Every structure is written in structure tokens, then in C-alpha cells.
Image (cartoon, rainbow, N blue to C red; front, side, top):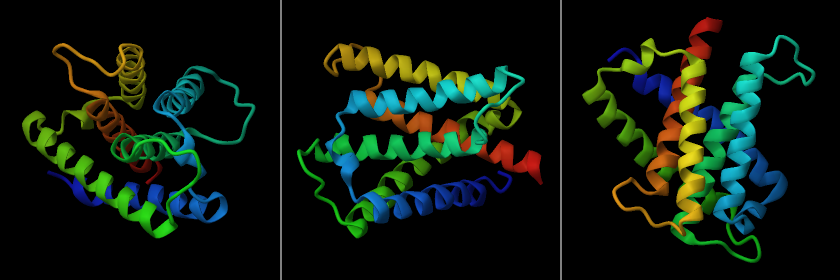
Length: 181
């Protein structure tokens, strides 16, 4: 494997840093969000990325990277919500939320490493636009599972889809960082 582990950690560190700063600004207000609300936030980010990839003109001065960071952070929030449940009032300190963030990111990285081993880092030959499309596909799957009240017959659950979206977004950011370098 190239430097995937280090590159992955660098992307997550960037995302976690922003998460912590936003926790300082807003507290854990996100804890009141139900899963469909988080899914919709991720969907908005992914749709914007797709629009940026298709359109020649940008009217807002933010690129794909900030949106991929948003996808990663919202997915981690969703994984925390899956575990802890939704609350009526913010209930996590920055330290508690950061510890949960770190835990979910580590579990998701392990999944990436396991799949990366089996797939031989195939994502390195993919386009960022394909990774965006895969995120959108996973979002549509999550929405369907949510509409089915969380029940699946043979498919992975919502958590696995959020983890895959995190990993696709990290891969996209690694590609974008390599293009910049």
C-alpha cells in the first residue's frame, strides 16, 4: 500500500479539526438531528459536489474539498446518533464528542483497510466524479432503508453505508490533495 494510512489520517485530522472548532462555536446542537435530517445534509453536500463537477461556472467560492469534509463529518455525526440516539437538547461536551468522533473514525478506517486489502486499492484508479456518484448512490440506499424503518432483507445496514460514504469521501480528498501537489 502506498501511503494510504497516513493520507487517510491526514484527511480525518483535517475533518476532526473543523468538527472540534464547530463544537466550540455551536456545542453539540447537532445531537437533536434525526438520521433523515443528517442524511439530507449529506445529500445536499454530495449534490453540490456533483454540480461543481458538471458546471463550468461557480457562484459560491467554495470547492469540492469543503463539501467532502462536510460529508465525512455529517456521516460521523450520523454514526454517533445511531449509537447514542437523538436527544431533545445538546448533551455532549467537546471532549465527549471528540472521543466519539475518534472512535467512529477508527472503526471506519479499519473497514477501509480491510476492504483496501481485498480490493487492492482499486479506488486509486477511480475518478473523483465516480466516488461522488457512489456517495450519491449510498445516500439513495440510506434514504430507502430509512423509509423502510431501518429494516433490510439482505443488505447492509445504514451504518455500513455511512462508513462507505466516509471512505469514498476520504479517497476523493486524497485524490484532490494529490492533484494539488
